[in-house]
Picture 1 (cartoon, helix red, strand yellow):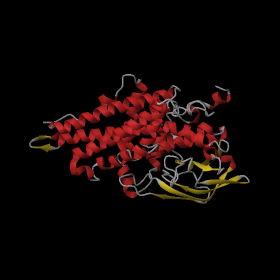
Picture 2: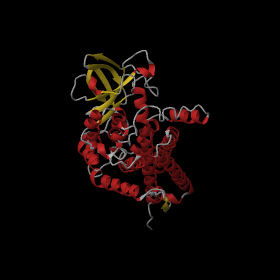
Picture 3: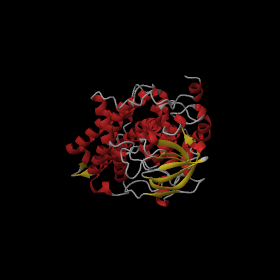
Picture 4: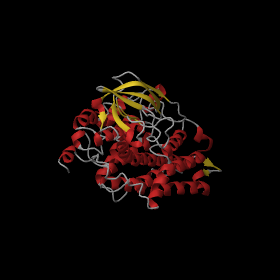
Length: 420
């Protein structure tokens, strides 16, 4: 007897989504299946960064959904960007590792705070996958308070800054062509002493990125420890004024929190689909293990959590698309989706039994990414603090909304110049 395998197509379809979003979902799946699936394992085995695939993804519009057409985006919005990340992670989460650097935090920070010249010079090539982006924020002692504990220092020296320090978990910094790096320009001013810089590591000496070996994560798209030794940044590459770095990073991370929640949702779906397929294929005592109630209990819990996460993630993206206060719902969505990914990965491994630990089954490395998304773009505990402070009336969660003086990523620059 054959069994139909659920791929969650019924679960993820939301009647409130328009046909454009459905078309985007289909396009991403085709791209991942035809361009990425045949070659990604080869890149992993060679430990080679897939620049050609990133360029193809840029050409296909996978990085520019939240940006206006004037800079090479499609202006489809954050919901489209989130669905793109969800489907990329569902198909091959390894390749989705650079999505935020290419289509969110790095180009987003430049677009939010950059001059028209900076935006024109850097953003289109990042969205097109021509240049590889990066964001260098967290430090070894920074943890969840990177600004308060930041020690990397940028000293003005005529028409350049000279930066010395160390960054941690600096994804793609060994491949970065254009990044946004945060450093202190005033050691005594707290968060107001942090400044943002557009960096070009391949043009200047003093940038040494060393990939970190991480169990179960991509060997071709790496996170790094970064050492900066008198690294030069021209003054014209400062992003905003000195001391603007904190408000820039807070605005840049907000959409990243939503899209990382989309990635977590994609991982949860992938774990669910693997578990359903295996439960129908693996037999015990003459019947598929999916016939046993304990397996059914796990499948039901996974499906329910995925549906709840999907509703929250899409709601957060909707709020951002409509310029509504979104820090609170983004924190809720990120917290719930990362919990769901972690739970689905655990249950999938249990359903697979010993095979769930074997690297030939993707459940093993999906589990590693579920753990990563539980921490990345703000840990679960940080999200709980934001959610609780808002619920208690402290209004911390929305304190940055609409008060930074920065343009919205989806707001064309000509509107900003005209006061729109």
